[in-house]
Image (cartoon, rainbow, N blue to C red; front, side, top):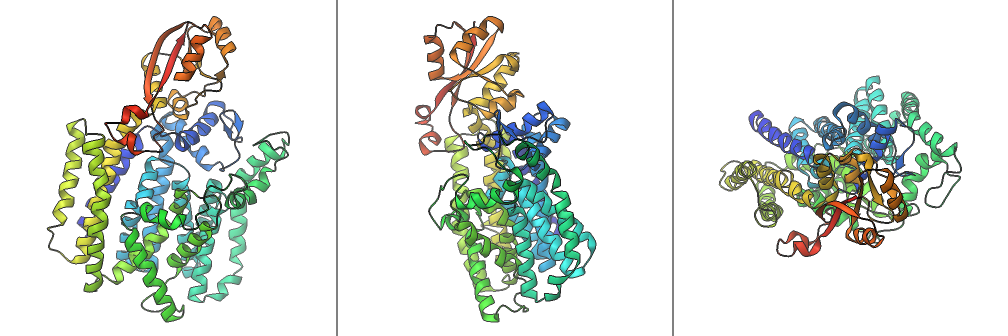
Length: 555
């Protein structure tokens, strides 16, 4: 792949990613996490994690700290919340390139970076921000630095790896440490560098890591160990230190903390098939080929295969995650850099094999159109493109994709370009048209924007106790709204002029039945947009699936 092609594709990916930074946040996880950071920003309390007025005992502090700091710089906006995760995603792409180059060559590193950038779940995480951007960037950066240390023994790599490990731990607990360290041990085992196991410099890494995670551990100590009366999920006498050092990861895997939500052992195997699109089938080819090579060479480094980091890490954690009682699709994201390096190494090595390249071309000729078709349907049928400026870039990308079918270059390059351009069209259709249209059916952000337009003070808006709550309404109001029961609504209406209530149709009926007089009423259709269903996507039946949410003035 020449430099010009690399720059054009890289620019296209960057522009599309940036489009995802300005779409309204989606309830629940994105809006929920953004509101925890908003509590820090509004109160100045960065030690305690508070979720809707209650102690939050789940994820560590780093995402919330970075988001709150970003609010200070850029204001309380979706862009500000997403920016830290976006930068860590860029770090993940760069680290994947560097590790791929280090383990193979520059061509493999570039291809691995492009594969990661266009993996469906990784790209969507740029928009739907949870912990995965920070965790993925931290994990692959740490792995790159640790393996770099094994090759040149420079202390700087230990310093940087300690920083990456601490960032991963401070994002999602021990899993941020476990994946890079496992990758390191797999590399040492495969390359037979046994002396590295007793290198005294690892002690320095341990102490640096321990030092860097101290702020997070200390904050857990302040919030929970010093306050045994704190109740979370009906329990008190909670040790925050024990939670973050042990319970956070292991109790989740056992199902103790969140319950068991998946009994299907193969959940992550079939999740991989859609989450790593458009590369998942080729990735499966690569894993099978690598395992065969390992068996054939008796796990010894050869000219055919010089690394086991990517394959070993992927297989080990794919199986380990499968034993977890609590499974969610985005858990796979932190393995995608290793999947990408594995696949890129395989594709480059097989680039001159005509028979295999024909198989790859036929595979992508089936997979990519099946993946592109939903993007086309969403933009033409489900949510037709409303303005011409959105139509032009999508039409251009679609034309580029179709033109690859007539490309006369090498099969390897043709297959790659077909995949990249097709998926760029899909991502562009999501970020430019689909998600902005979809979020108009999320009442929280829409009514928050309406309240701003009407000049309604956030401090005069409340929820109705026992009724709906919207993280996106809080976030885009820049305010954490409190709840009132019916009696408090009547009493507060005498003191707060005007008083506003954010509520559902049921809540509106309860308010009127209570004898409260209402003034202006703003309404917006509402649907749980994070869980899409066909009747909602279908324009003919959409109105039957939505409810109405109200912002009501109490006189």
